[in-house]
Amino acid sequence: MARNAKLESWVDEVAKMCKPDAVQWCDGTQEEYDTLAQLMYETGTFIRLNEKLRPNSFLCRSDPADVARVEDRTYISWATKEQAGPTNNWIDPNEIRTTMTGLYEGSMQGRTMYVIPYSMGPIGSPIGRIGFILTDSPYVVCNMHIMSRVGTKVLEVLGDSDDFVRGVHSLGAPLTDPKQPDVPWPCNAENKYIVHFPETREIWSFGSGYGGNALLGKKCHALRIASVQARDEGWMAEHMLILKITSPEGEVKYMTGAFPSACGKTNLAMLTPTIPGWKVECIGDDIAWMKFGEDGRLYAINPEHGFFGVAPGTSEDSNHHAMGTLRKNSIFTNCALTKDGDVWWEEMTDEAPAETVDWLRRHWEPSMDRPAANPNARFTTPAGQCPVIADEWEDPKGVPISAFLIGGRRAGVVPLVHQARSWNHGTFMASIMSSEKTAAAAGKVGELRFDPMAMLPFCGYHMGDYLSHWVEIGERADAAKLPEIFYVNWFRKSDAGKFMWPGFGENSRVLKWAFERCDGKADAVDTAIGQMPSPEMLDTDGLDVDAATLKELLTVDAAGWLESLPAIEAHYAQFGDKLPKALADELAGLRQRLEAAK
Ligand code: SAT
Ligand code: MN
Image 1 (cartoon, rainbow, N blue to C red):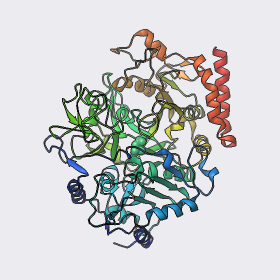
Image 2 (cartoon, helix red, strand yellow):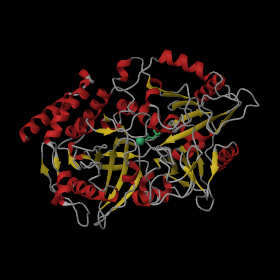
Image 3 (spheres, rainbow, N blue to C red):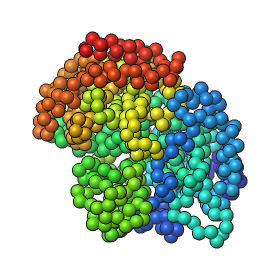
Image 4 (cartoon, protein in one colour):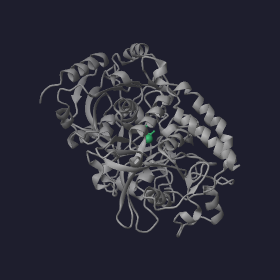
């Protein structure tokens, strides 16, 4: 194979800095995966699960100091702070390069540095992109095998081009003394950095081996770096699931959905409809890359190749197809271990096992007042194993998108569903999405935060410019061909604190309404906040929700919205003159309509 001189000199440079004992180029084969899994089994990182119950699968328990993305240690390092904007942590590139070069110096001693060639998107897809991770973590290699397309073919497609994202990842846990035993989950509890250099398409990560901090193809590349490329090149890199929905008449539409981490994207992407005749299939559960096709429509690919899903709460009831996906060839992180050598997590079964070993390796019984699995415990599982993966999920040209669903986790005010009147109105709605915080990121759970397009932790540049990019996408397109935008909220709670909407498969009722709205076949009421179904306009056959609750779910709480306007204004104020005028106008329009509706 022709050598890529730029790639090789970068690999040499990083190896000189980190001083690994060996450098291994990954070929992406099953043999490579098996060898590394066996290695981790031998060092105590991996527990091999019961071969009969869960073939070729492993459990891994992390260091308690390394269980989620660390947003306060995640940086976007443009030349100026202004380019990173008010919602990102910025750090001066020269300063952080000096600091991290110091940290990387000798940081891979006693370990192997793996060179992972990966493709986000089907290899060779015009929407796909190539990257490399240089890492001292075999756990990262095995996870990347599942989550992306790894291997020699990527090198062939790359040829001698230098159009690739450069990722460096070190656990920051060198083994300097040959007699020093390794720990099951090496990391660096004191020093963690996840730094993005958008100008040079580089990612430098240090100190964490967990999820989005370490699997650099996912949030770091496919969202933070790709969002910048998307802006520069006129496409969209979004934190969105992609689903295929088929009506009883056999008509097909594709929808994406932007929801913050741990708000049910994986469940929605694989939903089992409760309404007869409808079918939902999965294309992706976390990230969508979208480009305009020759016909003027937006086409989406799933850049990933696997699911890195939240385990707790996943069950036959909540997500039958996820349970089917992870029956084999999967990696489980921070779940509990059962006596018969399988994994378990909260809500996986109606009844908890009589005893397990919890994620912290302690004896656990259901009567204990602590969970057996970490709330951000995850499964890594091949997307191709999903029983409802759509046939076209790897189509290199992507699938044409008819609708964006957007939403957060809101106990009050936001109704079950409302539809935007226009692209700009939908952009406005997405820009004021807010959610109560979840366990996917370190920090306090429950606090409300605005999370525009669910991209707050994942946008690689100034959020005001990002909102302008959405507006510009709308200006460039034929309005009739743009996706319809629907704001949904599955998480309304009653005064007594109970969920008002059953969610899961019942969400198909909302999808059906959205599907038919796209064709102008379903009715809607025009309200101050957008277009909404009245209870009769929704298919509620067999739905177990009482009339009063349904009415409340579909009522505009004008007073509640008016009360939230100052918070929206404050949220917008941080963007200063970068706030697109179109969105300021939408906000003014909303205020006017709400006041009229009072
Ligand atoms: O960023 S992770 O990949 O760890 C998971 C998430 O937050 O969605
Ligand atoms: Mn996500």
